Amino acid sequence: MPPVAHPASYPSLAGRRVFVTGGGSGIGEAIVEAFARQGALVAFVDVADAASAALAERLAGGGLPRPWWRRCDVRDVPALQQCIAEAAEGLGGDFDVLVNNVASDDRHAPEAVTPDYWDERMAVNARPAFFAIQAVLPGMQRRGGGAVVNLGSIGWQIKEGAYPCYAVAKSSVNGLTRGLARPLGAHGIRINTVTPGWVMTERQRRLWWTPEGEAERRRSQCLVDELLPHDIAAMVLFLASDDGRMCTAQEFKVDAGWA
Image (cartoon, rainbow, N blue to C red; front, top):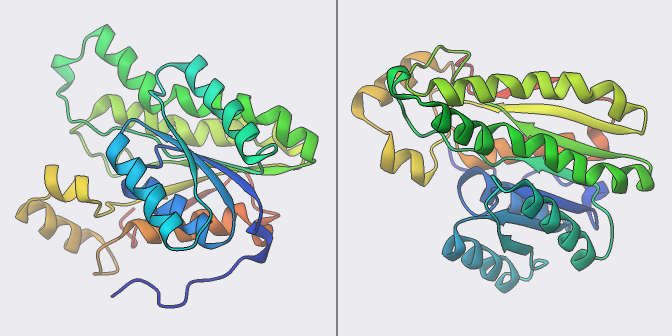
């Protein structure tokens, strides 16, 4: 099935300020573009310079608001929080929406994991989400509300054993969402998890696709079509918009029925 010809429009997102981690390619790229097409003012960080610059040029060349972006290694928490502050200044105000998308699903065997490797995996896949929330929280409080969307994974839920550190980090996303829902809710801030299935990004096709994996996907999904980045972005848009105003502390799976 091709991408939706006429995707939903959310007038409430027009002019909203949105920050996306890992927004230069893959699912993050689709999220950045989807918000830009809604008329939102988007900022993102990534370590992929060429892809990020190309995305910004493509959107601006298509008549959409040019996204603000910077190279940032999210393992460096002060650098991440500084980028969020600079992006807010560059876009002219506090953020309404935060999308914690950045992640790395590098494969590793349990017996090969060292304490340093463990810490590095958590520094990419777990820690940035909390500290990005911490950075946008004062601004959302000033604005009287906001929306945080955390990206999870079905990998740990279907017992995928190729990346135990990633599984631990991604399983913590639901805890982060539920653990912050009440304190954030007191300020009108909603927080939810969007859990993708196996999304056919360029990276996934290049690194992890195999005929055997494709056969497993077809057996496991209830819907036979490939899951694509725009499918994840569509759910993120809904949760960020006023249409999702009473959704918080929840996990929303977009996995074609796999999990």
